[in-house]
Amino acid sequence: MVGRIIIGLLMVVAGFLIVWKTDRVYRAVGSLPFGEKIFGSGGTRFLLKLIGLLLIFVGFLVMTKLHEKVLEAIFGRLF
Image (cartoon, rainbow, N blue to C red; front, side, top):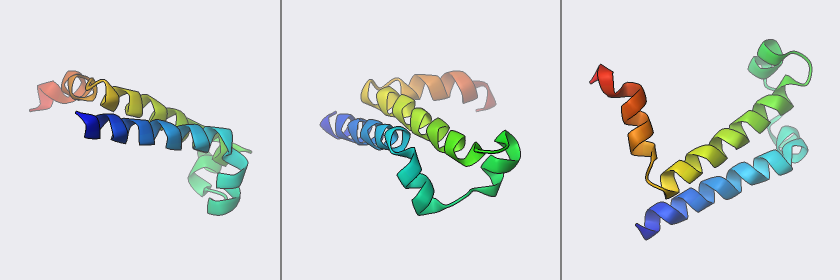
């Protein structure tokens, strides 16, 4: 239980830092052709913000143990 909360908090903090310091992350990783192709000019920064927000969302799901129910709701019929 405590491990799940710590992992979730680490995910939330990492996602927050990616959203907050997008320019630093952009300078570290460089331009991503996929982001530029899909989202146009400035797409890499937008993609990084989306990844950060997704990381925050998944982190909260992990902390509250709702990730299992979300995965079951999405992929439950496949298995």
